[in-house]
Image 1 (tube, rainbow, N blue to C red):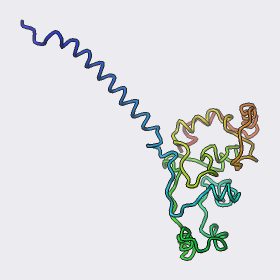
Image 2: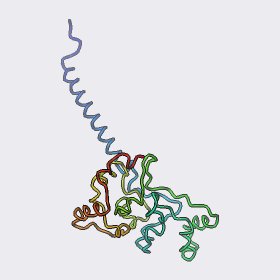
Image 3: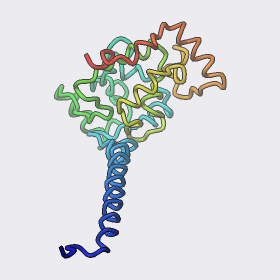
Image 4: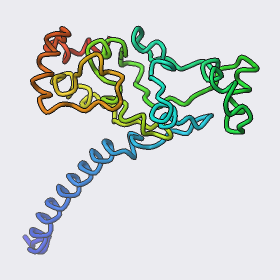
Length: 218
């Protein structure tokens, strides 16, 4: 019986299989890298707001504590968005005619809340409680980054489950004294691991349970 395919097809077919495997691997890698990139997660991308509020100015410049605006952060799962009356505590006296603050004045006059765009927004199937993390010694900047240096706020981290689990499995790497939770200038000491293990025990952080699915998915 006559040979149907030319002998060179054997080499070509092998080369094609190798090339296909390489292409599939490259596309898979590109997909993973893209999924974890800031382009996909929007990390480090300033979020436009109805009013260009600068944390850098208010926190670093004026020394306003996080809790002045985010009043429920120590006792609630939600950090809290300040009502317009909080803004007007100062802005009824300063920058009263600024065009940038016109939405704030209008909100206060009509008693209509400003519609801020959320920056750190978790999926609905994830349970997160700010008060628990604060009571266990997790500083604001651990998750939110150096907010005191952000003219406009951006998401610092991907908020992927793997990122959360890294801390849940080894909280001693990030835990700090409760007195330093709101200190945006806090720097981890050289003996962070030693201090961290001490605080994990002192604050009753149950490390063996932190990786359970039910902790975040309820």
